[in-house]
Image (cartoon, rainbow, N blue to C red; front, side):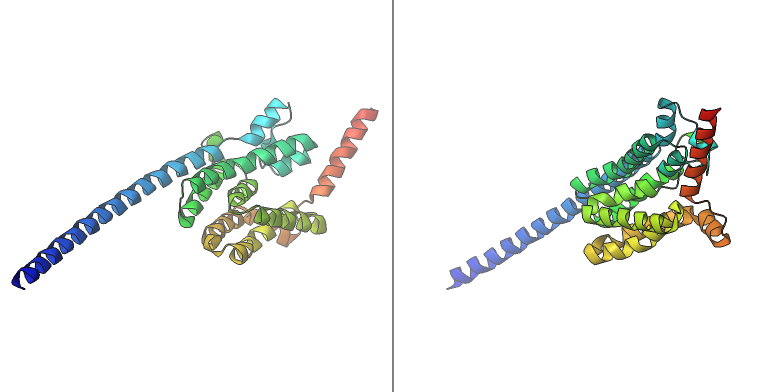
Length: 245
């Protein structure tokens, strides 16, 4: 009987010691995993900012021998301003490139199992790169297409809803900026309905888009914001007049 109790006590001591060792190993492995994740997030934020800094509108306009978008219309190097210049293919190319600038870093981070709050920071870094690029004196675009690309990895259904909202607002009002503002306001509610774990990151992106459009909001309030259809008609008339001459 005494031998049985001695063995039992010895087993309990060894089992307790084994549990302590396993707990310490798990603690250190969790700490290492967190350190590795922080390094991955920082690296992806830098990569996202550099991707966002690529001046796709300026490069495409130079390749297509178009006017510098910063010196035309709204002065914004984005797809809408390239469309105002009368180049549909150039605007489509700029739109695709700007979407990819936001999509690529977030998608890679998604495959690296980065958690939703950190995905939001990476998406913000891509938008910051587009708005305040490393080149051209930190003067960039509005970040709408890049933000759309950053949301795309969450789900294509959300991307379709966002593009549909922007297009509907544009067709009803004629203001591209109003479409972007309405989409930014509704985006967090779309995400909350479909994938609520990404609501906070998308809300951060929406705030950034709204802050960037504060001048457009003031012009819309005063009624001085130009409609995209009117500018396209003026350009077509000018081209027709030059052709006749």
